[in-house]
Length: 144
Length: 420
Image (cartoon, rainbow over all chains, first blue to last red; front, side, top):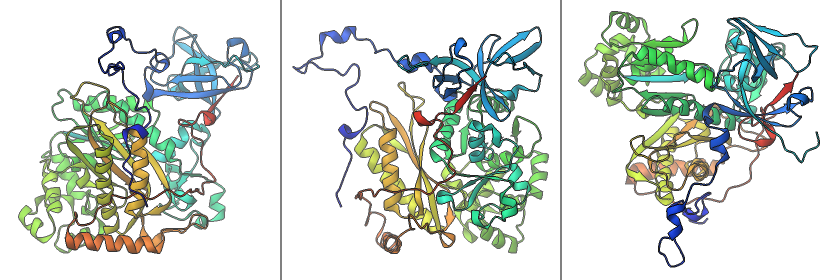
């Protein structure tokens, strides 16, 4: 048995923080006045982490629309979808990609496959919509 | 005023969120090592599958009609944290009470609380995707009962508000409520109270407090006062013995030092372990939360992390080891922490514990050690023997054949979305 208090250095992310940086002499570096926080993709892609989920695209039916097999979807449940936007919907017990379309008070979901009939959204059929697809991340090194 | 928000059939709802095919189907979630049913969908309750029944005892004919899932604490913990994050955006103070329940301190909030409650429920349901119910009342004990009422409401959102503890409707309700339904009053205590003609919640409320304190305990007397509408209990006083244990405390000042946090956590684990053994229970899952202060500028952190144990345990050493590991993952440099707590869940009675072939069960040696531990601390004081030692972890495996994916915690297990 060993007595083990964990030290700050063993914890993840315990490197020095912005604003605490010191020069070799121990004096604050003159560059400190010009520091800006590094760009953080989390802020850009995931402004609402509590309601944001990641998913993967399966299938190649929507290649023309820019969704390829294995692409990463960033889906936000807190945002209302507008016509023309893509969303994840629950259809036949599955999560599937659809585009919201609408005219007047009539709304429907259209899949990528043109043979597929449009799914009308009645007033109380909101449960079909799982979340709004905000971003799709494609790994350009992968063949598609 | 206080509110209690509770996720309906939490584990099942989590499973359904990413696997909509489970919607409308009888679904059960099993304890660690696929032992007993610990969560049931409404459909499963309807066909008469009891809570706590060992999976292998469900009749074969019935088993074909239902879906059993292994518990997936990484998923449940993540979603539980999301629920709390959403709530934290709208109320000044929340107290996580268990993995699926959270108290909201609404003191000082003006305006229509019923409306606020409805808005909170709708937000959580839409943004996280889990059905929740909410009870609002002047005390935590009453809020818990209000929540119970909300769950029975048809339609959504399920919110029940009792703004006034003296209202005739609430009085009527308490007269009909068996005393054992009141939080903190277990079956045994209810029997003793019943012998003294206190069989309803209203009778407990109206019993003289000094007498209750003398005859039973301070907690029972406080429960009576809470039923009258005077808040006098903390969330952790209200633990229900069968569901979860919570040990938490605010720090004297804001803290970030890992050594001190680790020490505080050891302290909480010791208390949680003692509570667990006092009740004759074993825990299957451990959660830890670290909370920053709302009143302090700077980054905020609320959500807890959970992990499940390979076999249910009441061993303080083991609980602490898991908890410390969670703390290492929670800790962020530069954050000013105000409060920390440890939560134990998936409680099962020690005498029903199911040894697993692969992972075994609590070694007899550890049980004896914990007995000696409790005796020494009782006789010579809590400071006489404390936990300052951590053992090396042993590799462990879990029997969880029906576990869903790490939908929110693993890149290689994300839910897949069919295109077209």
